[in-house]
Image (cartoon, rainbow, N blue to C red; front, side, top):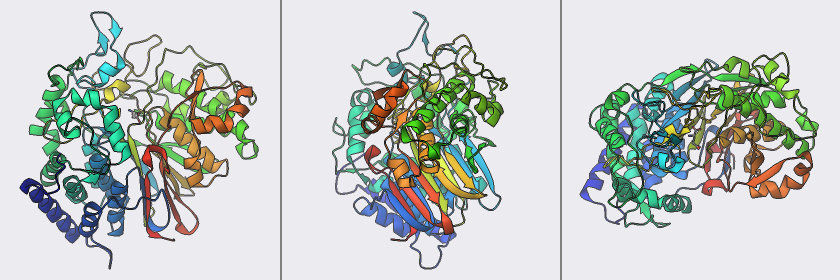
Length: 613
Ligand code: GLU
């Protein structure tokens, strides 16, 4: 990272190469007549102050929504020049690796949901990080005391790093459904990383929040604390190391990451975390080897599906709990006529639905390669109807509610295991629809804001701490999310695509740990049942009931609804901010409404190819 005004010869060389690739990309995928080329758009995007960042745009011809202005602009440039939704999603995701390096990047993983308008099919790519083959089931237990490691200590360590899946996801998405190469889609972000982006308050604050642990890892301190302090708002942040890494991958393909020097360096860092002299973090060693990295494979599996009030809702199957838990919550809600209920009544039912769905998630969902996950049952309307029968429309049930018996014949429950949920505001989501009606919902992450805190020296990206999504200690009854070698930790990521009579209607997703599930559910309920337009449904204050004594709620939610909901028996605890949604609606005549957060996370950017105003 450099913050000088005059670019070094190295920077100029990288820009020149990135621009060359961008130009070559455009030559291969000639743009529609009159449209600006990718290269031109990128030069404009990267060379001027931050691009415009509306949180809502309406129009035609394609739409992109993400948390970041640069990423949305790059995604839009791809759509404008004839790329499809997958090309745009991968290009925007690569940009997020530059501008949102604490939330996403090639050191992490994610889940990609794709709707193909030509075939009418929804498919998914599971790029979740995996536990190394040698990781023992007791990895997060201090064998000297028999106690689990302190969560924060486990986060900033080699132990927490899962084998990254993001780059393999991009390559697979492009191979299966894209029209452009990985080289073409990385090109704009090579330029972006080299020219830099303007530091905003969110980026500066995220750095400051992580300053002490970033300082404990020399490569991270060098990159993200350039003068021993977080970058100053308004300055330009460049990441030449990442530009070089992207360039290497652009030229040599994903093997340049999964094999050879970079893979060796990742494995070495995980096994022997390098800390700054005097740092007090325990920085536990992990088990990842170069073989684990070379052996990483994405999974392509069926999307989850439910019917909700005549719409088809598709999501991510386990190892994410997103699809099953959003699906079960909505199936439960379908037992009630929310459109004629009061706001308080609807919100009470929403809390009860998600609490019950979370009880079942915690009891039954893990990596299906290791656990027999009853995905079909959890998504069945009969099962949800049985759950709904224990919900009192006028009173909150005592929390935690027990999980259901898998026998859907009655309202029976089974004992619950102990459960702890993490929640944070890391991770990022992007939604894309193209002119052909193809759609992508893609949520990607490095887990905590700043992941493990460990940057691969000289490579410009942070490694994830996804393995802290595992339950740390084995429990009785057996927790489906305990650590096992080669297993994927249970996720809450919920990239969601909603079809109406075979056409895309909504694309939704969010970060927020386990609050992702309630956020996606609440936004869908707001839009489908409570009569809010999509921008309103996204901006509305949020609350999250994940089967705990108190509902986590934003202050705005408490102010608006607590007095009405307390008589039901709900208690509240304030959460500063819940989620950061990026969504798109396709309405009558193909009118697209792209919506990002107006305020949360500093506000996102939603763009359309041909705005109507
Ligand atoms: N690690 C989380 C999950 O997979 C996502 C990160 C977050 O948003 O907290 O569910």
